[in-house]
Length: 313
Image (cartoon, rainbow, N blue to C red; front, side, top):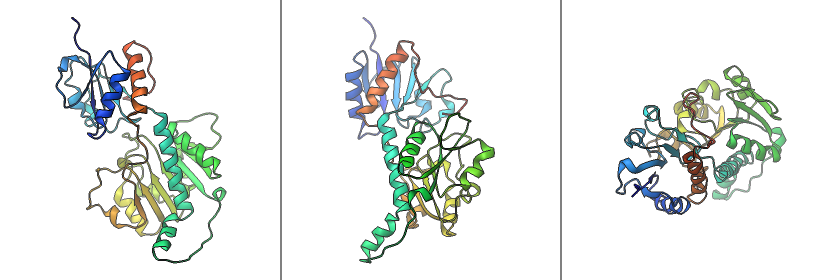
């Protein structure tokens, strides 16, 4: 009698049962368990998770791979201590990219067309009209040119915004103004009325949204951080808002989540907190992609989007 082959899923309690149900249907050769179910550790071959602890993952002696519920891996706690023999499969989902494209467009339009001021005028019963530049007069700089960065650029380009891109490496055939590497970062930011961050969080990109860089955004400009809280130096942004160098910031990810009520961000009316809701992988779409990746990996076939420890993503 062959042993039971287990997959264990660790994610939010409000979603995990849907993930278990859908993964069980898609991978009938495995018995799929919640992380808090009973199972034998030696039978677990795959961990699927959001915010799992690498030290916990290390305790499974026969694990073949860990799977991130997300395109990034920085949410994995103690990632630097993950056993070197455990690959991590990232999950790049079309619904994640679409949600991010929608949300970035929402933030840019809200700032450009002064939606917060319109809502305030509504609350105060004030009939106020104001001129705004058309999109072709607004420069949007996008930090990161993976799947999400490309989708955001395409959507905003379609609306008429002037798009520029910054990424870590050189690319050929990009039809936007393209900057790469540390030496070109300052020149890139200086072109931007709006700066959007969708970078992966790595050792090199941590704290990249600091005062030195953010102060290069055009006066009166806007920051939209749809990356991680670790990209942003919180106090530096607050200083630039209070100095009126930046007119607004839309923040989706934070160093501590949920954002505590003691955070200064809550008290600054020009900072809009969106509670890490820009994009997520649904328990309907995600399992389909993850099941295909596990089937390929299990058969010894090449799987896209493996975590590269040297690059950090």
